[in-house]
Image (cartoon, rainbow, N blue to C red; front, side, top):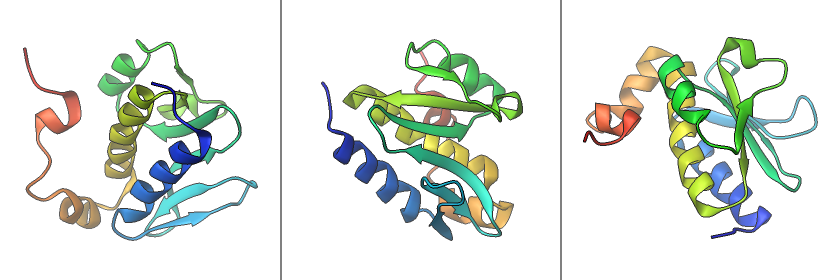
Length: 130
């Protein structure tokens, strides 16, 4: 189901800023989400179509590239970053899971462990098994 640009941006922003010690910056004129000591974990292009750029581990990137709405991120793709185009609810829900993953990869260990204590399992990252 298609979603509005406004709803996609609002939902992404709310999740990003709900994670421990996150804040929003705009060093390049668009929203960038950072954690702790200036560690970027995502950025948001709020134009049509909405795009979310974030970091994933190698296994998750392989899965991400199976979606036609995912591409290697410009400039930082070689470091494990992807860009997801958010035009429907399925893409939004998947991107929100990846946003959590990107935070997990970029946050300092103490924050990361506190944020996901008791909630992170293999299923949280890779989905339920067969």
